[in-house]
Amino acid sequence: MEKHLSVVTFPKGLPGFELLKEYKIQQYDELFSVLISVTNPSVAFIIVNPFEFYPNYELDVPDDLLEEIEITNRDQVNIRCIVTWNSDRNKVTLNLLAPIIINFDRHSGKQIVLQNVPYTTKHLLWINGIGDSEGGEG
Image (cartoon, rainbow, N blue to C red; front, side):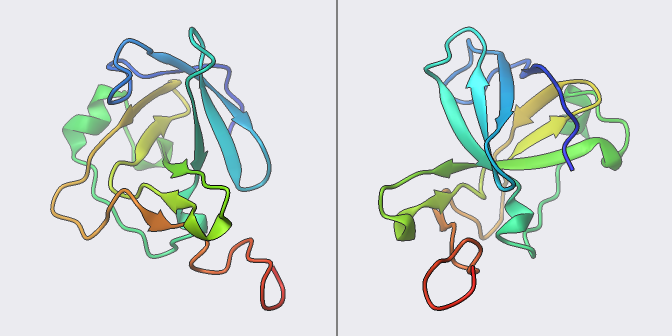
């Protein structure tokens, strides 16, 4: 699934964290990973592959944004979205409006904000029953 990599560089940082440019990805389980700042490990984000939760998720990334992280073909593109955790699993959300685009070949990434899309920063994570322990199989 994901290629192993030591550090992903975000040339412009992440929005709100522009000074932190290097992050490592630590796999937690089959669905969740943690994006951890190399220089400030207290800055970390839970990330997931959005297609695991929203199979019909669609995004069109402009070529100029792909060029910023040296993507030369679409096979190099890996999409991750940030999860906002909550102690109540029914309130855990996924930011589909601002996905993280990662080029695992070049170890570079960029978070983008999609324009003119129906997505928000707070989509319920468990809406499609993935990991749902209530009402049957999970």
